[in-house]
Length: 636
Image (tube, rainbow, N blue to C red; front, side):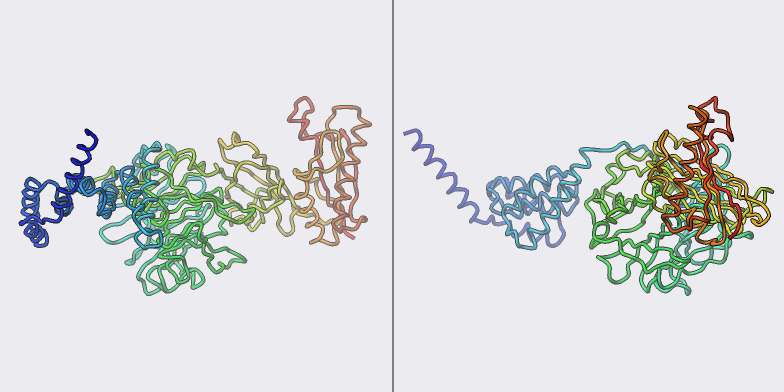
């Protein structure tokens, strides 16, 4: 009997609610009219009157929510929409979408996920509405996750003289950090400036680039690792092919040269800007709106071959989307790319992302958002990352106000989260001279990973005999030096641990002129990258790079003959050491013969422990004594 009474009661309540939905309150049309006339408060007042008299009439809750939303009162808008959903049981399922949209706008991403889920359950999965809601759901899930897992972020305004009452942004640095280039905007005019690092570690001296700056806007620049070349952007100029083009200038003995357009291989009739030159100087990344991309602006790369830039290559769908990808920064490790995008899932309009390139399979890793609150709901700009990967530099108005109290952009820095750091890198600074101390220009220097026998870097010394290039941990390297008329020389850099990156490598290299081989032999030259296991005469695979260089020397000088010299330390019996040194010299000779050098051009001589170059009392000394050398001994 009780159950039958309750059933009748529920039927009566439902019938009453359905009837009240059909009976439209007299002043409902009046409330709608006020809303249309933008008389929002009057519309709200009429709606409240209806709610008081007909609290079960759900359409009025949607109407008052719309009025509150239009006035900016999103809290009340959500409250009334939820009441509408409770009253009609979700029959008007567009209310789910409205609640989710407002929550998304307010940053309540977890709440928005809940209501987008409910909304999607009521849609045809093939409809455009479904696809759009699915995108918003994914965005809210991403933002909810990022906010629930914030990263440490404590930005600091860059000390020194770079920041001013004007706006400064887009910093770039030479590899050694001694020089910084940035853009300063005064009014509507953008110009390039450089700052020099002083002994206290501050960029205290700031000067404009007089030879570059003009009445046009110059900005969005990148300086090469050694500071010799600057790539930058000029917009709306008679020398541009499109709205913006990439230009370059080269540092000479009298300063930087007159800027030149990079030409139609790099630039197009569209927008081409924001260059980032790789530390090896052989790859130029930039953003472009040219035809043939995936969407608005895409990131491209061009390769330098024989002093000519190649046709730009789009980085592909792993990086680029149907929206905008801009402001690329390629780190000195050569593989880690940072860029900003409004096409990948993130916190706001533009977020900063990271991706890594795998040179083995020539593909990009999955793009990663660098995290909240580095990225926010606002428009986040580009940044540069320090050589060791620990710090990021960027521009923001969060900590700055000009004399008039308005925010202006300053350059800030912060500690980059460990998971978002690139491989740490350091640099090698070389000075190459002859035995008289004269600097040698145009000396070919090759950096070879001896474990993979792959070329990492190739370049030439400048007029002062100097060279600067990046190097990363995880391997051992051969440094090979060649110059016409001088003996080949190699060095070995061991970087199989990160612990050796506390300081850069500063090296002075001396090359000896090749003597008249009909009259005298050359001095012995150590082959620093020939390796054997202890007590063995078998060449280790890491020796291949050195063998290749020695082969190249003989191949390019077909009349030259050499003598291979084997040496040991004094550990063990002298007769055994003599035998081992002879066998090792023969191993090097045989490796060259296998590559095609005639046997009569190569002598092999073992000298055992008879000619030490260091003390055998220490392990370091014994290591130096265990060596392989070669001597140029004459001509055919």
